[in-house]
Every structure is written in C-alpha cells, then in structure tokens.
Length: 151
Image (cartoon, rainbow, N blue to C red; front, side, top):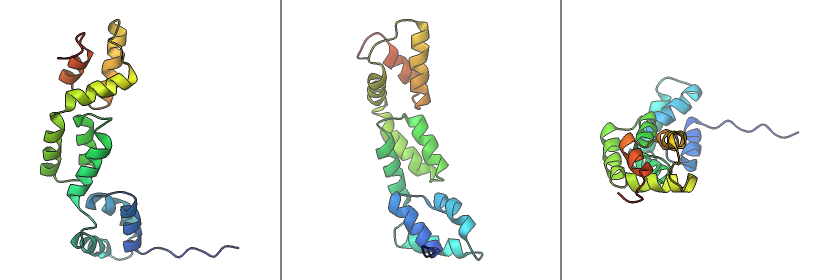
C-alpha cells in the first residue's frame, strides 16, 4: 500500500504552478485561495514570491503574447491578458506591438486553414467567422478575404 503523499505548503503549491508556466498574482490568488489555512497567509506567500521575482507581470504578458500571437488576433489576446488580472497599461502596450503585424498574422492563420478565396457568400461568412473567433477585427478580416492577395 503506497504511503500518503505529504500535503504541499501554500508556497510549494505556488512554486509548482509557477514551474509550469508564468502566472499573474491574481491567477495564483484564485487558484490557491481554497488552500489558505489562515487569513493573510496567501498574501504573505505571494508578497514573498513577488519580492524574489518569481511573480512578474511583464513576463506573464510576454509569455502569453509569444504563445498566442501566431494563432490569435489582438482582441482575443487582450481578453486572455485581462482575464489574468494584469495591469491595463501593460496589456495596452503589448497590444500596440501586436497591431502592427495583425494583418500578416491574420493572413497566415487564414492560409493554414483555407488558402483559397471564398467562392460564394456562404464560404465568405464561414471564413470570416473563423477569423473573428480567433480575435481578428472586421477591418482585418475584410482585407484578408478580399480578392487581391496583397493590400
């Protein structure tokens, strides 16, 4: 019969989460709150981890943008960053950098899925919904789906 696993401390749980990927302080608070044994314990642990730079909002922003920019548009990435409880100024700065290459990223996502201009209105709607679901705005979608390959 296997021995019971020792329960991890709050700090151990936080470090385990951080070892997998970058997490914002708000994410860690949400995930670790059920394991807090005394009031204020979680805040102390997160303060300590933040002081040692284990929790860093800029790294979270950079990580999300790096992982998701090849597949998603700025609208979807903004939603994901906001759901992590990140500072709105950092989110806006990251999105400003994404906007410059938005059209090319949208074309690449579209090319991987379709690679042929829509033949009729139904196909155009299907392709537009595909791009919209990935967070590209209407102006970019219109340019991608236009007949001319480069605009």
